[in-house]
Image (cartoon, rainbow, N blue to C red; front, side, top):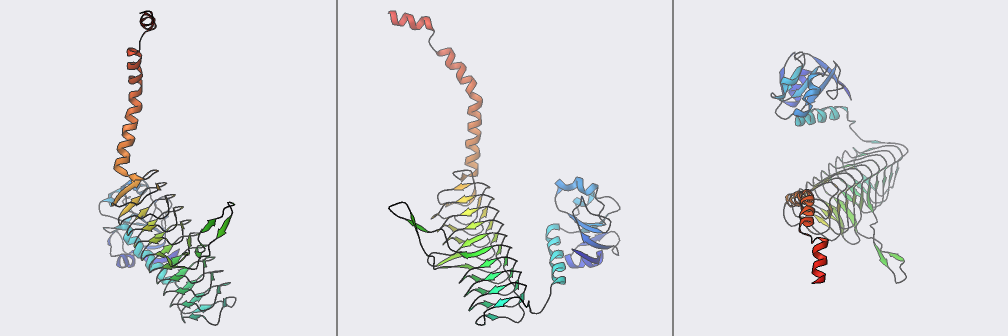
Amino acid sequence: MKFRLQLSDIATIIGATIEGDPTIVVTGLAPLKSATADDLSFLARGEFASHAERTSAAAVITTPALARHLPPTTARLLHAAPERALADLLDHLVASTKVTGGVIHHTASIAPSSTLAKTVRIAAGVVIGEHCTIGEDVEIGMNVVIEDHVTIGDRTVIASGAIVCRGSVIGADCRIGPGAVIGSDGFGFIESSDKSYRRLHHIGNVVIEDQVEIGANACIDRALLGSTIVRRGTKIDNLVHIAHNVAIGEHTAIAAQAGIAGSTTVGKRNRIGGQAGLTGHIATCDDVTIGAQAGVSKSITEPGEYSGTPAQELKRRLRSEAALRRLVELLPLLESLLQKTAPKPTDQLRDEQD
């Protein structure tokens, strides 16, 4: 993203203190390693200090403590929390480029029974089914399909290629990534006596509360009966699968390729690592962290960190691994002791003769 701002303007936007020339103009944002003399960069962690020492950036957002790693000629925008400052600047830049007012592309297909706010922005190829309600300042990207009886709250953004299936409810200030599927049928079948499968038609829906973000190609299945629910403020990464009748608690974060099986309840403020799997019909309490690739096969009733397969409390797992490593180290000593105490062939022959 290109822009043109003086450091004094940026300092006002993010609430920073300037060390250096406030009239310096920057036209872009870039990482420390690749920044040029026209760019602004940021340094929030000490492990990137070596990049800071060699940066060519015109200015860097950083803390007073980390500023010492920058070249003397580099201007500083000093802030106690550089990442928050960067977020504030990005919010400002994105807002300044946003198109206001309603726009509906002429190739969009919208059922006459649906109700759209005057400020919606709908791109090419969008299909909106019957009896939908679309709120103020909603943005719908190219080739999005919104099936019948869908409700979408104010200021929600649905990216290109996403599908929102019948009856889904999406709250305000949400973001749905490219290719995401909200409300497809769950994986529900009855096994017959001949080992074939009969489909269970899912007649429930998906409810996504306010301020939820869902990544690209994530899939959230509709409930068999009732609702699959994603509570307020939850953040879901790309390629996550959430099965039918799952309930996700407020402000939970789920990393890429994680999977949650049917009818599982996830507590508030859970953190679920990449490729973790939770089996069906279990629950986690509030404030649980589940490590990457963990396999959770039973309910978690105490807050804390869990990892491994089957998942167990992290400290306990680390103690078990340490004990196992110690056991491996002791094996040569154990074998030596066994050899020393084993009966000699002559002793064994004497015992047999006696």
